[in-house]
Length: 203
Image (cartoon, rainbow, N blue to C red; front, side, top):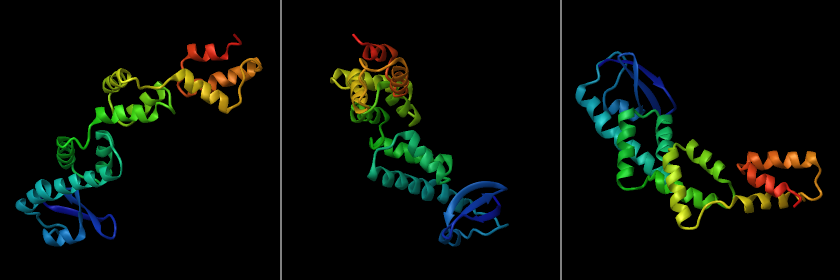
Protein backbone atom coordinates (compact mmCIF):
# COMPACT_ATOMS: atom_id res chain seq x y z
CA UNK A 1 0.00 0.00 0.00
CA UNK A 2 1.26 3.45 -0.93
CA UNK A 3 0.75 6.48 1.32
CA UNK A 4 -0.71 8.78 -1.32
CA UNK A 5 -1.54 11.69 0.95
CA UNK A 6 -1.04 12.96 4.51
CA UNK A 7 -3.52 15.69 5.36
CA UNK A 8 -3.15 17.74 8.52
CA UNK A 9 -6.30 17.51 10.62
CA UNK A 10 -5.10 19.48 13.64
CA UNK A 11 -1.84 20.46 15.28
CA UNK A 12 -1.48 16.93 16.60
CA UNK A 13 -3.34 14.68 14.13
CA UNK A 14 -3.24 13.83 10.45
CA UNK A 15 -5.48 11.95 8.02
CA UNK A 16 -3.71 9.19 6.15
CA UNK A 17 -4.71 8.14 2.62
CA UNK A 18 -3.58 4.78 1.25
CA UNK A 19 -3.84 4.06 -2.46
CA UNK A 20 -5.88 7.28 -2.91
CA UNK A 21 -8.49 6.32 -0.25
CA UNK A 22 -8.83 7.66 3.30
CA UNK A 23 -7.60 5.00 5.74
CA UNK A 24 -7.32 6.38 9.29
CA UNK A 25 -6.24 9.23 11.57
CA UNK A 26 -2.96 9.10 13.49
CA UNK A 27 -1.10 11.38 15.85
CA UNK A 28 1.92 13.00 14.27
CA UNK A 29 4.30 11.14 16.56
CA UNK A 30 2.84 7.90 15.24
CA UNK A 31 3.71 8.91 11.69
CA UNK A 32 7.35 8.90 12.75
CA UNK A 33 6.93 5.70 14.77
CA UNK A 34 5.56 3.78 11.79
CA UNK A 35 7.71 5.57 9.21
CA UNK A 36 4.72 6.96 7.32
CA UNK A 37 5.69 9.35 4.52
CA UNK A 38 3.88 10.52 1.42
CA UNK A 39 4.48 8.49 -1.75
CA UNK A 40 6.20 5.74 0.21
CA UNK A 41 4.99 2.25 0.92
CA UNK A 42 3.40 1.43 4.28
CA UNK A 43 4.80 -1.87 5.47
CA UNK A 44 2.26 -4.64 5.95
CA UNK A 45 3.36 -5.24 9.52
CA UNK A 46 2.90 -1.56 10.37
CA UNK A 47 -0.54 -1.53 8.75
CA UNK A 48 -1.57 -4.61 10.73
CA UNK A 49 -0.38 -3.09 14.03
CA UNK A 50 -2.32 0.11 13.35
CA UNK A 51 -5.54 -1.61 12.30
CA UNK A 52 -5.52 -4.55 14.69
CA UNK A 53 -3.86 -3.15 17.80
CA UNK A 54 -3.44 0.61 17.96
CA UNK A 55 -6.76 1.93 16.66
CA UNK A 56 -9.11 -0.76 18.08
CA UNK A 57 -7.70 -0.18 21.57
CA UNK A 58 -7.91 3.59 21.10
CA UNK A 59 -11.54 3.34 19.98
CA UNK A 60 -12.44 1.15 22.98
CA UNK A 61 -10.74 3.62 25.32
CA UNK A 62 -12.66 6.47 23.70
CA UNK A 63 -15.92 4.63 24.43
CA UNK A 64 -14.89 3.99 28.03
CA UNK A 65 -14.02 7.65 28.56
CA UNK A 66 -17.37 8.74 27.12
CA UNK A 67 -19.25 6.30 29.35
CA UNK A 68 -17.58 7.71 32.46
CA UNK A 69 -19.69 10.86 32.21
CA UNK A 70 -23.08 9.40 31.21
CA UNK A 71 -24.89 6.51 29.56
CA UNK A 72 -24.89 6.16 25.78
CA UNK A 73 -26.74 3.92 23.38
CA UNK A 74 -24.81 1.80 20.90
CA UNK A 75 -25.93 4.09 18.10
CA UNK A 76 -24.68 7.19 19.92
CA UNK A 77 -21.27 5.63 20.55
CA UNK A 78 -21.00 4.58 16.91
CA UNK A 79 -21.73 8.17 15.91
CA UNK A 80 -19.05 9.47 18.27
CA UNK A 81 -16.46 7.08 16.86
CA UNK A 82 -17.49 7.90 13.31
CA UNK A 83 -16.91 11.57 14.11
CA UNK A 84 -13.42 10.55 15.22
CA UNK A 85 -12.95 8.91 11.82
CA UNK A 86 -12.14 5.47 13.20
CA UNK A 87 -12.22 2.65 10.62
CA UNK A 88 -15.42 0.58 10.75
CA UNK A 89 -13.59 -2.54 11.94
CA UNK A 90 -12.21 -0.58 14.90
CA UNK A 91 -15.65 0.80 15.71
CA UNK A 92 -17.08 -2.72 15.71
CA UNK A 93 -14.27 -3.94 17.98
CA UNK A 94 -14.83 -1.10 20.46
CA UNK A 95 -18.59 -1.65 20.62
CA UNK A 96 -18.19 -5.40 21.02
CA UNK A 97 -15.76 -4.73 23.86
CA UNK A 98 -17.97 -2.39 25.89
CA UNK A 99 -21.07 -4.50 25.22
CA UNK A 100 -19.29 -7.63 26.44
CA UNK A 101 -18.95 -5.98 29.87
CA UNK A 102 -22.53 -4.61 29.71
CA UNK A 103 -21.21 -1.05 29.81
CA UNK A 104 -23.63 -0.47 26.92
CA UNK A 105 -27.09 -2.01 27.10
CA UNK A 106 -29.76 -0.39 24.94
CA UNK A 107 -32.65 -2.17 26.65
CA UNK A 108 -31.49 -1.03 30.08
CA UNK A 109 -30.93 2.47 28.67
CA UNK A 110 -34.53 2.55 27.39
CA UNK A 111 -35.96 1.37 30.73
CA UNK A 112 -33.93 3.93 32.66
CA UNK A 113 -34.89 6.70 30.25
CA UNK A 114 -38.60 5.92 30.63
CA UNK A 115 -38.30 5.95 34.42
CA UNK A 116 -36.35 9.22 34.45
CA UNK A 117 -38.60 11.04 31.97
CA UNK A 118 -42.05 9.70 32.95
CA UNK A 119 -42.87 12.80 35.02
CA UNK A 120 -41.80 15.18 32.24
CA UNK A 121 -42.77 13.66 28.89
CA UNK A 122 -45.59 11.70 27.28
CA UNK A 123 -45.12 8.19 25.97
CA UNK A 124 -45.08 9.34 22.34
CA UNK A 125 -42.33 11.89 23.00
CA UNK A 126 -40.28 9.36 24.99
CA UNK A 127 -40.62 6.87 22.13
CA UNK A 128 -39.46 9.51 19.62
CA UNK A 129 -36.49 10.43 21.84
CA UNK A 130 -35.38 6.82 22.14
CA UNK A 131 -35.75 6.15 18.42
CA UNK A 132 -33.56 9.20 17.71
CA UNK A 133 -30.97 7.64 20.01
CA UNK A 134 -30.95 4.58 17.77
CA UNK A 135 -33.05 2.18 19.85
CA UNK A 136 -35.41 -0.06 17.89
CA UNK A 137 -39.18 0.28 18.19
CA UNK A 138 -39.45 -3.32 19.37
CA UNK A 139 -36.93 -2.75 22.17
CA UNK A 140 -38.73 0.45 23.21
CA UNK A 141 -42.07 -1.38 23.43
CA UNK A 142 -40.46 -4.11 25.52
CA UNK A 143 -38.95 -1.51 27.82
CA UNK A 144 -42.38 0.09 28.34
CA UNK A 145 -43.88 -3.31 29.14
CA UNK A 146 -41.15 -3.99 31.69
CA UNK A 147 -41.62 -0.59 33.31
CA UNK A 148 -45.41 -0.90 33.37
CA UNK A 149 -45.01 -4.20 35.22
CA UNK A 150 -43.18 -2.18 37.89
CA UNK A 151 -45.89 0.46 37.96
CA UNK A 152 -43.81 2.97 36.01
CA UNK A 153 -44.59 4.97 32.88
CA UNK A 154 -46.01 8.41 32.13
CA UNK A 155 -49.44 9.31 33.51
CA UNK A 156 -50.53 11.42 30.56
CA UNK A 157 -53.71 12.69 32.19
CA UNK A 158 -51.70 13.98 35.15
CA UNK A 159 -49.02 15.42 32.87
CA UNK A 160 -51.59 17.28 30.77
CA UNK A 161 -53.31 18.68 33.87
CA UNK A 162 -49.95 19.82 35.20
CA UNK A 163 -49.13 21.66 31.95
CA UNK A 164 -52.60 23.25 31.87
CA UNK A 165 -52.19 24.44 35.46
CA UNK A 166 -48.83 25.99 34.66
CA UNK A 167 -50.51 28.01 31.92
CA UNK A 168 -53.37 28.91 34.29
CA UNK A 169 -55.76 27.37 31.81
CA UNK A 170 -59.34 26.78 33.00
CA UNK A 171 -61.43 24.89 30.41
CA UNK A 172 -64.63 26.15 32.00
CA UNK A 173 -63.65 29.76 31.27
CA UNK A 174 -61.81 29.25 27.96
CA UNK A 175 -63.39 30.16 24.63
CA UNK A 176 -63.18 28.04 21.48
CA UNK A 177 -59.98 29.70 20.21
CA UNK A 178 -58.23 29.27 23.56
CA UNK A 179 -59.25 25.61 23.65
CA UNK A 180 -57.91 25.09 20.15
CA UNK A 181 -54.61 26.60 21.17
CA UNK A 182 -54.40 24.37 24.26
CA UNK A 183 -55.36 21.33 22.18
CA UNK A 184 -52.45 22.02 19.82
CA UNK A 185 -50.08 22.63 22.74
CA UNK A 186 -50.91 19.32 24.42
CA UNK A 187 -50.93 17.37 21.17
CA UNK A 188 -47.42 18.59 20.31
CA UNK A 189 -46.31 17.17 23.65
CA UNK A 190 -47.65 13.77 22.73
CA UNK A 191 -50.92 13.73 24.64
CA UNK A 192 -53.59 11.65 22.90
CA UNK A 193 -56.68 13.27 21.41
CA UNK A 194 -59.06 11.37 23.69
CA UNK A 195 -57.36 12.62 26.84
CA UNK A 196 -57.19 16.18 25.51
CA UNK A 197 -60.88 16.25 24.60
CA UNK A 198 -61.81 14.97 28.03
CA UNK A 199 -59.72 17.64 29.76
CA UNK A 200 -61.04 20.43 27.58
CA UNK A 201 -64.63 19.46 28.21
CA UNK A 202 -66.64 21.69 30.54
CA UNK A 203 -68.21 18.62 32.17
